[in-house]
Amino acid sequence: MKVVSGQVMQLMDRRAIGEFGVPGVELMERAGRGCADVIEEAFGEQDARRAVIVAGKGNNGGDGFVISRLLAERGWEAPVLLLAAPEAVGGDAAANLARLAPGTVRSVPQGLAGAEGLLQGATVIVDALLGTGMNSEVTGVYGEAIDMINAAGVPVVSVDIPSGVDAATGKVLGRAVRADITVTFALAKLGNVLYPGADLCGRLVVADIGMPDAVVAEAEGVEFVDLACAAGLFRPRSATAHKGSGGHCLIVAGSTGKTGAAAMAANSAQRAGAGLVTLAVPAALNPILEQKTTEAMTIPIGPEEAGYLRAGSLADILAAAAIRDVVALGPGIGTAPSTVYLVHSLLAALDKPLVLDADGLNAVALKPELLPARQDRVTVLTPHPGEMARLVGCSVPEVEADRIGCARAFATRYRVYLILKGARSIIAAPDGSIAVNGSGNPGMATGGMGDVLTGVVAAFLGQGYHPFAACQLGAFVHGHSADFLVEPMGTQGMSATDVQEMLPVALASLAASRTTATNHQQGE
Ligand SMILES: NC(=O)C1=CN([C@@H]2O[C@H](COP(=O)(O)OP(=O)(O)OC[C@H]3O[C@@H](n4cnc5c(N)ncnc54)[C@H](OP(=O)(O)O)[C@@H]3O)[C@@H](O)[C@H]2O)[C@@H](O)CC1
Ligand SMILES: [K+]
Image (cartoon, rainbow, N blue to C red):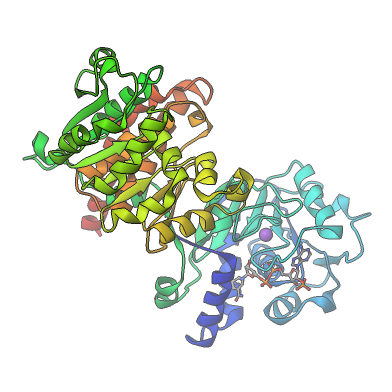
């Protein structure tokens, strides 16, 4: 599903009106109708049908006037609380304001004192205060109205985006409405899918407002990776599959005290569909990993007493990589100077697609200028915000303030693919393309989850997926697998190993979604 910023949506509206001759008032009519239909479907069965529309002076409010008129035509009581003087409303919104029956609108430009009673007995509140045109922190009467809506204890339907949420970033500007349903138009906005906006939207419905296909196709946006998107990217195994066609992953991992990271990365690669997995581990840890893993093969690296990877093992690792399809480097390797030197040497010398995580990333952060030495070879980085901050040389709050911008800038500058982890992981490609992962839950906030992701992404790369697809699938399947665990175990105490063991179930669900989609197409 394509997702755009509020600014891009406004450009799309202008193109539809200017180049394709769709009248703005018609777009507003369709937007209002889309909301009214959702309201009718969700709340229309109730005996008392009273929708209170809280409207601002812009076109978001204009949508609200259409909703009021259409619901009234369908037998609803649909009063409007307008937070501006009627004269302050202009354009298409003014045209729709003029079409409301006398007595429908109560205008309160100065404040809400005395207007609280209007919400009493409401079946639903329609939040039509602010949409893509919000341009500053919410204060004054708009802020009061948001507080009043949130305190009313009545279901809320937000028009386009919960008022107070920035459509470009999902951030709350001052305060924001908490909606039960949000009806957005033509395409979802970034603020509908990025946190905290995503959480404030409740159930998201994308209403078709007849935006011309060319305008939708040419709009600059990002891909939101949901089940349908991931299923479309996924290639189930063919009937003639053999272990050679599943790809062979080499996982270079582990140091004393961190054998679990190596085991989880290897086991997750296998659970995500890798044909074969080999672990290259410090020699002293080999007996432990022989025990911890069953399907994976292991290669002891370095002298017998070695509890960490050393620079002198470069040739051995290159030889191991030469007969494998993809290398994952970093889980649990530690930050010993000799290990860091080894990572730096491998960057240039490894002639295979490479996934770098954890201490592999910390080593790269010391010399990111080495990344271009990989030239056309595929490199995937999977940093969490702390690792991203180290890579860029900034603070974690700076990364979090603009996750998409930060991921895109690094990926394009260093010609790498990057998965910036966190709620709604951002996937960036060297050409600047962005995808936002839609799966996952707070249960994943625990150690080892990154090692699982590394194994999963390596498995998809090893199977020959395009790197951008491998990153999208890797991130989605990782979160989707964890989502299957929420019902039986909640979000506290879920472990990375639990997620690893659920990976085949997540893959099966992608395959099933593909089959359903194909059946639908054939049935059409
Ligand atoms: N264009 C189209 O054809 C279609 C658009 N559609 C709908 O239009 C919406 C976008 O409409 P929009 O551009 O009029 O902006 P909107 O979100 O209503 O708010 C802007 C108004 O609020 C004000 N304001 C801003 N920030 C504020 C704040 N913090 N606190 C208080 N006030 C603030 C600002 O005033 P200003 O500061 O500029 O004086 C301005 O007057 C979009 O989300 C969708 O619902 C659909 O009908 C489909 C067709
Ligand atoms: K709104």
